[in-house]
Image (tube, rainbow over all chains, first blue to last red; front, side, top):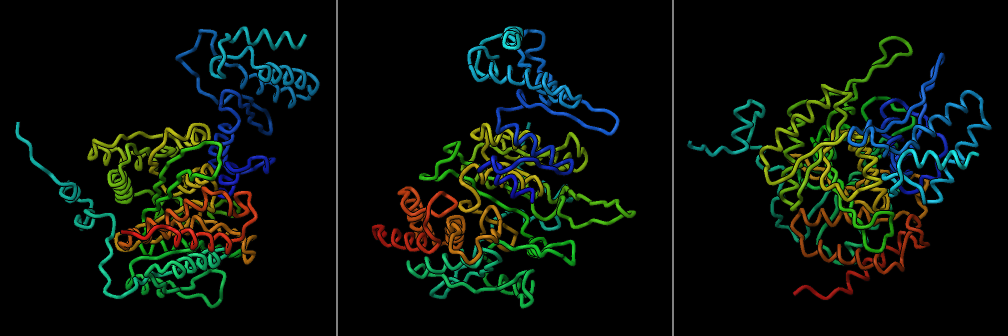
Length: 132
Length: 374
């Protein structure tokens, strides 16, 4: 049941793997789980249809920081990684994902929302550096 | 400029909303004084671990001499010997107050409306209050959480109006009325005022459900104007869940329609230690029902003497306060707090090995160890 999942998710999210549910519950539960892993700034998503697929970050458009090289591109980058997997470019997807996670884990070059002072371009350059 | 003093009930009567505005004056039903030596309270043990949790309450009350006697009504959708809804109503007509365990759903229900829904509708228990407060001794990711979730529980998505239009296409009707939305909003603001809370946040999804949740939100905002001392804001339900797990301290009182209340109060219960530790209360204009906040039957634990009775005991504390046994309520609350903060006797859900009975005995001992009231 939805309420049991919500209760257990907060207590111990590791007991869950893949969850499938109708529209409204998915909307609520996906935001709930995003909150558990760091928020919408780092949560990727994909919309899979029978004829096409759209991969997107689900955070807001952040007009207050737009155009200032401050935004965290992680959510969109990881959504792009999902897209690569969907297109069967598994190796490339794994490379980029590993680079992103390693930059975040190092905790040195991070954007403002993750507690750092780096610019979006600096964070991106660091990921590219890891890839080369 | 001159001002006319207008009471809330006058405003509501003039707007043609309430047939009996007097009933809006008090949203808490005060229990009439009992002349008997012990106060009678209806008890619905429920299903799953419900009966064991009730045994814990009865043992505690007996062992500590709390002057209450329980009139048990065994209603259940799982039993063929179940008491009827009329039995519950008759008992409550006498006692007005009930302590209730969780009720289960049968695997193959013959009706869409569950027993819980029938109970809430026939007793008009429109307000469900779940108190999610961190307990000293229970370590959680976020300490010092203190959130109250107030949920409308007689309409919304639980209207039991579903039908199959054509094979394979089922339609469900979500009903939101201005009368019930205003009623629950007023209840929430009254509750906030009465308990010294500062902010009420309405939880909704009016960006998608523009008419139903839109109406709920509108009614909440309307009520908010009558309580200028209480801050009012609103938040979309998915964002609310995300904020609850990431930054719960921004919340005070949450006002929700039916389904979102079910989700939000389980998330908030998880934040402070789970279903075993959270108390709840349901109010109608005539009756009050006290039951655990997260209503799970926990059937895998039935009969194994492992369930945590804290949530049920804390609901019993609220029940004692409601019937005027404030000293006993305070002493029981202190006994529970002392046992949990000692961290010695803990049930399985909190990582311990103690049984339900161990915990119950510890509560009785802690109560009796308290200095006598002066």
